[in-house]
Length: 135
Image 1 (cartoon, rainbow, N blue to C red):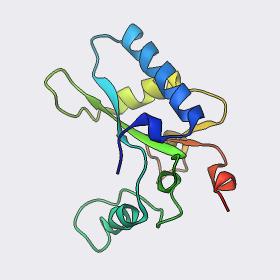
Image 2: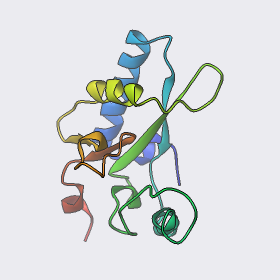
Image 3: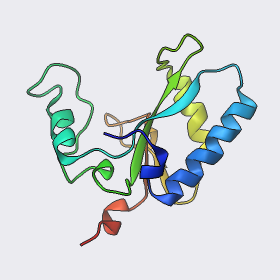
């Protein structure tokens, strides 16, 4: 898996870079957002899908390999996390909701708006990405 925004579709890069700049200006004392996943191979997708099913842990994806916006280059999706001042991950949902407000961009969908039971607060993707997969 990669964690580089440059592995993502240009529209995601633009929206993310704009949102991070706004975050730093508006919330300089809060935890800092970072990319936790951009591109994910089919093998990594399968391992992630197995988590909470045939492997220990919580279910973290509903997508099989090829069904995830992360499985293509450039990636049609990325996930974020937040790092606090102590260098630890900060999973406070308030941060994700505040960042989503800054990420509002035409053609970008936040996973926090996915159907109930499938909310994915760290996730952003290109709307209709599946229609853009190279044939």
